[in-house]
Amino acid sequence: MAKKNTIDRTVWMLAIVGSLVFLNILGQRYFSRLDLTRDRQFTLSSATEDTLRELKDPVSVRAYFTKDLPAPFSTNARYVQDLLEEYYTVADGNLSYEFIDPLAEETEEDKEKKKDLRQDIFGRAVREQTSVERELESVGIAPVQVRVNEGDNLEVKRAYMGIAVSHGGEQEAIPVVQETAGLEYDLTTLIRKLAREKRPKIGLMVGHDAPDPRREIGRAFGLLSQLYDVTTVDLSQTPEIPEDVNALLVVAPRTALEQPELEAIDRFVAGGGSLAVFLDAVKPDLQTMQAEELNHGLGDLLEAYGIRIEPGLILDAESATIAVARQQGFMRIQQPVQYPFLPQPEALDSDHPLTRGISGVVFPFMSPLTIVAAATGVSAHSLVESSPESWVHLPPYDLSPFKQWTKAEAGEQSARTMIATLSGLIPSHFGAVPEDSSAEARVVVAGGASFVGDQFFAQGNEVLLLNMMDWLVRDDALLAVRTRGLKAAPLADVGDSKRVMLKYANILGVPLLFVLYGLFRWQRRESRRANVSLA
Image (cartoon, rainbow, N blue to C red; front, side, top):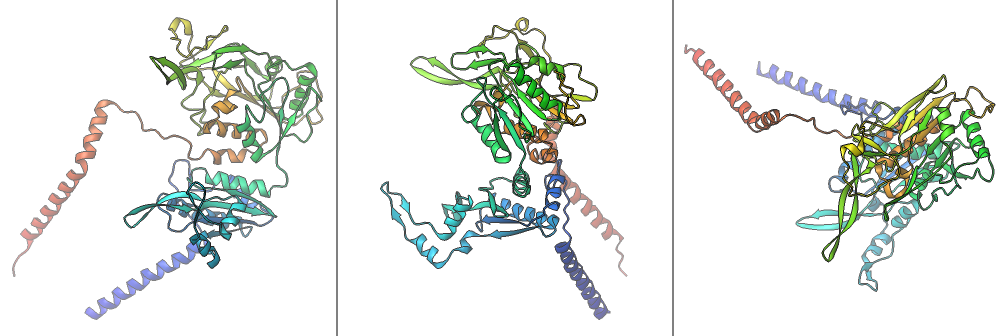
């Protein structure tokens, strides 16, 4: 009997081990993951899968991660390895990847160079670069300083945490992977950038005293240049938009456009082109707190399309702060002041792909927009609105950050549209006859342009601008990938009584469960003991 039980246990053990081995073999061939996150952060998006399946030529990815990194970088390394494995599986042979420890690639000569330390004129330890360091520098991956516990000592070491992507002789890099929230978007974007035959072209209108692309909107210009071919378009010189331009971007012209320029824009839109216009009603000077009123001359054209720009500026109780210098005695200090001219809505439209998941965007000096009756077949959407506690300040403008606004001065408070979109068959305002009458246009209108200026260009503003450009060039698939991990998940607001109840439930709940479980076990044991009879 004992022998039979031993055989049964052995068979069961072999069956379990064999099943685990078989499952591991299947896991190598068929990848699967259970993703329970709200926006499926650990599941490849359809945009990524389509990009990988449409690859025509091989793409090579090399991840350079120093071995035995401390947390949280070690977790990031594991995430990158899992992500690349998923890319490899979906690409079906058109993507290969390597996970490389740069230290393991060093030669004996490199190790000797690392020992040969010298001092520069400032007393700092310097040495000659190793071959591995030169190679990574040429790729665009630089070392970072990380703190590592070595025994009882805390040391600072150089480490690598970068990714290089190459295709057809061209190469791009993600220099440092410090967090994984937007990694899928960054990696997919690089692959698309290298693999697609032609990058979309964006025309940036210049002239009319518009902001300098490399100084006043330099950060936005540089960001767009990384993903698109950006060319300048001067309609005052040649009132025609080049045929290869996919989207025209008009940012804060400060003098009125002439009739031939308006007609050129109208022909472009009526022919199915995409247009983004960010228009300032004023040119504010935060040093003198003065505002110069502007006239861009685009109001009638946009109203004919279906969006009217109203006079005044939107002020909002939900606003960002600015640092204002104040004199206190002999000292001049910087004081943060909430500034209602900088509306900062808590959340943008969660249903529209352009704004889904985006927060923390500042919209300085915005004029209100009104969606009027658009042509049949044209869809209009209020994309960004101020809070219900906003109001409109009509000229003359008082920009003082210390002004105390009364209810009487504010007047009617309600949500105001700051950015709106149009899409569909937009008819020509000037009667132009497009070559393709079935081409659908896309238009974005913003009641201000400062949100893309260098002074206010934060992370949320960057994401919104890129989303707009992707939507305008009809690259809709990437919109959902970019906003992953950006959406805030605040705790639900609860009342005081419920908060106290939850607090004591957390403190006493677990110990009480253990006590109840112990009483249950004790009662069962006593019950068994009472039922035992001695033969």
